[in-house]
Length: 176
Image (cartoon, rainbow, N blue to C red):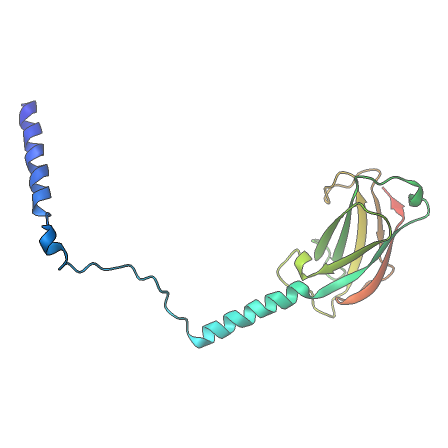
């Protein structure tokens, strides 16, 4: 019985192959459909919107939020901050919570120049020009901006600023 089933499978398998066989002489007459390699051209208004969006993103990346210098306070000048990380954080005065922008710098000689721009945004939208921002700088021992440990040092800009403000001065003079 087992041999019968094996022979039955063999017959149907080979006959199926015969059924789909095409001699090579006839193969050149078969029209093969090639996959479409070209993408359809978008409508002009779609291209225009896409280009406008890309231009807006590029402009936003380079748009200045704030820039300035960070100094050490008198007491902090006597400490060694080797291995500490410097974070500059822009906080919204109107909507506290999540930072607007953050930039990270390796420990360096002070004063440190900093710049926050569109590349440092924590959300997709650039802050409006009338938005008030509080700028904080932090020397962080463990390199994790979320934790706040004893020994970390921080300071704030002397005043709240609007996006685009230059010449901000921050003194790191508060110890945790």
